[in-house]
Length: 140
Image (cartoon, rainbow, N blue to C red; front, side, top):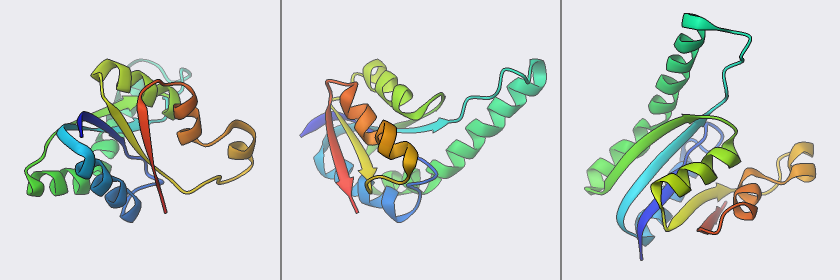
């Protein structure tokens, strides 16, 4: 069992995929689950108050995306907290995993999704290559 588990949730894995990864995370967690949603960086072209407002809107959308998972964790009585971070997904997942000192990262994967994944690797593959933390890849 793991004492602290990171569960990244994206818009792509929303719904059934997220629930599948959550079930796995809950099955191996003996402590706290950290829910993470990574938002796209706001362009530096937009400045000042508009930039801040776009960041707030992205964070609010991220929290909305996490709501069904939060409800499931609350129903199960599981310990958890949420983070919505701005950045590139793989780098942000690795950074948050280190900051939170998690023992395990649980990610949903369904293989390669296009040319970008073929050339660069999927987000799950990039996280795996850049962390020393155990990673559980939940397949479809």
